[in-house]
Length: 501
Image (cartoon, rainbow, N blue to C red):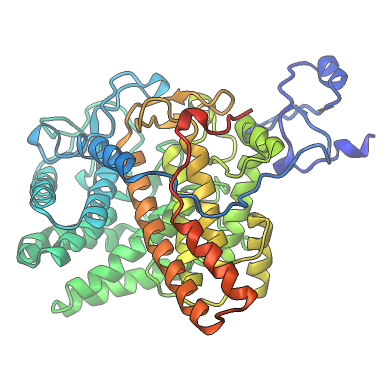
């Protein structure tokens, strides 16, 4: 037996050869896999022949102010669609295997309106869109659902607002908690809507507190479980925030707190012995966990951005997608920093490609880590070693910022029509794939760039502070270099950026 063919499943990189004789003639290893739920390659590269991806990069701003204006315009064009208050998933009636995206998803709507509020502030236009969405939330729950419980209905017809009448993966239990989070954020930003928002928050969180163990489809609408990390972690946040929001209702607040504690007590069950966070028992490697770390964080020490569990998960997913996608392997071979991330191990939907929204979510996590370090957070030695492996250099706020930039800059390489973003990027060619102008993409890119702005400002403040203490020393010059790097704008148009080859 050729020992160079003894490669762990997660380390196998496809040679893209379809039969044994051709595979072996190409210098690759051949090992049939059956059953194969993880979609592992039968023909794969030998050990030691695959180069690891890197996130080693100095700060380099991914998007200019003008480009971000275009992103925001594309994003807001899908909000309050036809004046209905609903959020359009994508203006695409024929998105390949996904079919028609011209519907309003409960989950997408809550996340997108939350992103609007978070990244825009409360101007007149934003307030109008939020008011219309609030009216839609009220209207959506004030109807019967022929498919079952209206609280778990995933998508609605535009502009009528009736539940989608066709077959779908139901129920989906993450929507009520996500809606509650955005509703409470709106009430905090606009105090005079709290009285109107309160009944909707109570309705959604009463349901979550009573049904958080309910069987559900996952956020990708493909598998069912009672233990999705995404659902649990975001529900926990909704309930904890809700217990404060309804504080004068002592019984209700106590119920929410108790349910949040029960969910929190179950979350360590998602963590493997190595510290990796699994999405569920029937699907471990899933970047939904990264999105959950960003959306559900309460800054209370549970799965914080620099925790061992979060960093182990980031490391594991980076390693997997580096090996899984030809685009990532080409970048690694060429020494181009940055990784594109997909949904989960073995994904085959529309080819099983990198997703823009998830790639942006990973960048957001790195920016949050940068911000924490810049503000003085201590990194445990074991976590620091893991991050050093990812960064290819020492752990610093500036290097974490650069790592996030490397991801967004790599993703931006494949935008070929201004800032228009399809749901996916073809894993082999880099071409746009699946739904056009996916709203969730734009929401996550906006949030990523807001996180970057906060991290960049904190790094510059840190550099200024340290420079005063170490003026005239080598350390001072290093901080000056980092500060100058933070101000660098993109130097090249996309057409002249490094290719994926």
